[in-house]
Amino acid sequence: MTDDTNLDQKYWEQRYHSEQTQWDVGEITPPLKAYVDQLEDKSSKILIPGGGNGHEAEYLHQNGFSQVYLLDFAWAPLENFKKRVPTFPDGHLLHQDFFSLTPGQYDLVLEQTFFCALPRNLRPQYARQVFDLLRLGGKLVGVLFSEEFQTPGPPFGGNAWEYQSYFEPYFQFRHFAPCYNSIKPRQGRELFMVLERRERPQFIA
Image (cartoon, rainbow, N blue to C red; front, side):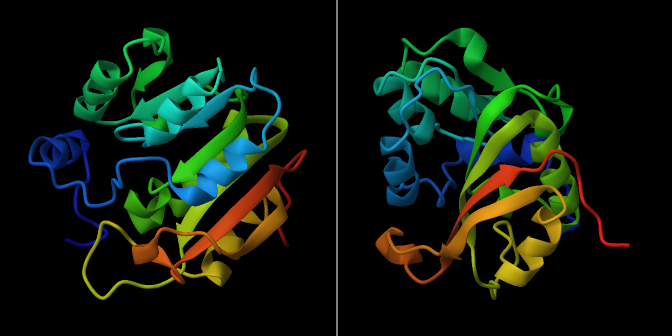
C-alpha cells in the first residue's frame, strides 16, 4: 500500500473487523503514561485523535480526567471502547473526520499512532489543524516514529527534520527528542514531543 491509497473509513473499518491492528499494544504506552501522570489539572479538555481502541482515553478516564474526547474515523473501535469503558460519556466519543472538528476547543491533543497513519501529503494539514483546535497555550504531546519503513504504509515513517518543518510555523518546541521509555519493539525508533501552540503562525518568507 502506498501514500496515495484511499485510506478512507471503509479501509479502517476493515482493519478493525479483521483485527489487523498491529499498532495497538493493549494499553497506554509508557511515554504517554509518564506525561499524563504528571498532569495536575483534571478538568483540561483533551483530544485523542485517531485514538482507535482508546487505551489513552481509558487511562485518563480512570484517573479522574473529566473532559477527555476520543475521536476516530471508524466506528468499530469506538464500539469496542464503549463496551470496555461503559462509564465514559457518550458525547465524548467523536465518530468523525479529524479535519472537520471545530477550532479552538482543546487544551491538549495527545498523539499516538494517528499522525503515522495519515497519508504523508496530509502532514502539513495535520499540523495546521492541531494549531486551530488548541486554545492559546495548548499543547500537542505524543510520539512520532523516527525512521523510514522498508515496507509500504500505513504506518508511514519520517525523521525529526521533516517533522520540524511541519510544526515549527505553529508551535514552540518545549521537548523534541528521542524517546527513552518506548515499548521494547519501538525502542530507538520514536521521538517524544511536547509542542506549545504559538499565538499565531510564523512562516519564513
